[in-house]
Image 1 (cartoon, helix red, strand yellow):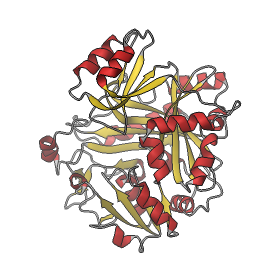
Image 2 (image 1 turned 180 degrees about the vertical axis):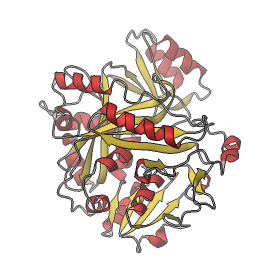
Image 3 (image 1 turned 30 degrees about the vertical axis):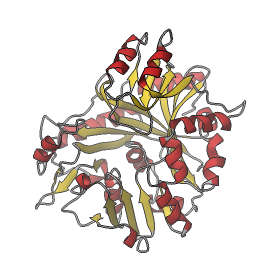
Length: 427
């Protein structure tokens, strides 16, 4: 099959390589120049200078990130199999307040996800005035996927949050202040094929911060555990209510809803309406059958079923300094450095991102971002999956400077047990 990837920062390059290794011809286009060396030295997937000239060539078009929904919808209307983007996907992920309102309106008395009290602001000063006198701790989050301003979670009081906001050099930008809810954070993902969600779903528990113990920078994901589930109470309440909206917009791809679960309530946090990372890596390992056809049939709205293994899949992110900092000079010095030895390792378990290939066809650092990739494996229990993944990591890391969290499996089994006892999940 001919597959075209359209990307802004090459987030889906590792998926492109796995599809290429699955026997497909893959071309990819990258918008940002800093990421164009990723994959250099490998013929399949192949970097192209223009994606428009390859749409007719492609049997399937893949978008790996939100932000290009108009282009995705236009290609889809032409009859192509398109997966992973759409204007509705852009809106429900990037416009957090719209996503909250959508979830609020779609809920029923039987299936309802609550929204913790929140306010949106464009002025830091007005936000601080709102917090003065508030006894409940709040969470501060910049809107529109803005990554140059940190998310701040207050502890027992809002004093530290107010001090943080006072220190911000930017005083005017859109942000949200939401009352903090204490519970178990979980993501639930469904695959939408244009008509409805496919019968099987997945739950994800991930570690988002850079270092063990959930401290350090929030990188989005440093590792996660994913497992298949049926139509449990979380699925019914968090995903089913938005089916009509997705169908109206002919969306095809993954939709993830991130929530906090308490004994008697679900609290909505945000949507991820695209491939999640490391969710897609884990999902790949759980698909029981032809993986290329799985994606193609979703894009063509022809998928009838999804067969997932009853295993746990675990991913652990590998990175190299200066990650997560974007120090361009330091990243440039890393270019061409060999930090992993993958000889003797099953390539199916290795998901490479910031790499190019030397004259020996070995993966070396490309100097784009320092996010090397992830190691993924499956097993019947969380701890067994962790043992396999960390065993591979010990085998492939050449340098002590390769960084990863060693606690991705911590608390997962306990949290699953708690969610079962509350009646929210069954498996």
